[in-house]
Every structure is written in C-alpha cells, then in structure tokens.
Image 1: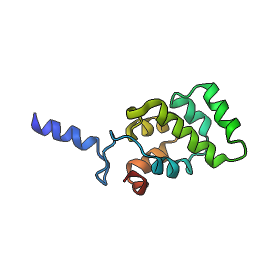
Image 2: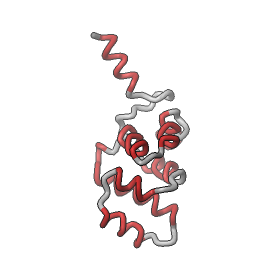
Image 3: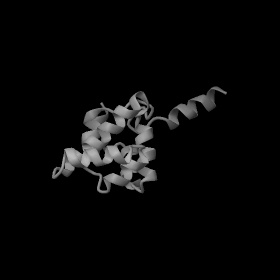
Length: 114
C-alpha cells in the first residue's frame, strides 16, 4: 500500500519536483501566455463565459499579449485554489495545445513555477 501511495505522489510531480496540485502563480501565467496562439478556444475550455471572453477582448483591444495573460488571470481568479498546474495542463490538452501542456510537464517554464 505504501508503494502505491508513493507511486501516486510521484505522478503528481513533474521532473523538476514541482507539485502539479499547487496553485499557479502570476509569473508562470505571464510566461505561458506568451506561448498561446488560439486563446479563445482555451478560454472556453477553461470555463470562462462568452461574456467574460468578450470583455477581455474589449478591455485589452490591440494588445494580444495582455489579452492572453488576462484570460489566464481571469481563469485563476474564477477557480482560486483549484487553479492548479494540473488543471491548466488539462485545459491546454482539451484545447488542442498538447505541445505546450507537455512543455509545462517537462519543466520548460520552471522559472515561473517558483
């Protein structure tokens, strides 16, 4: 039983010892936002309403980098402690952004994880 528990704990940690169940931070969101191309599909997959998506587009019109970042911030605010690295990775995969999700799991964005 202890081995099984240890194995399950290992599955929740990426290669650089970052806990995937930890709440994302803003530095990480800023870094990841720069890598997102199709942000509206991701916003929908993360559970943001059409009204919220529209408001973000209007509020930050012409600043695509800020739009993507604010979308992720809105998701974090909406989900609070449930806005974990794992939840974002799952949302990225559902939105067809598997490469970015895999890069996060592989530790590419570790500076933002600390």
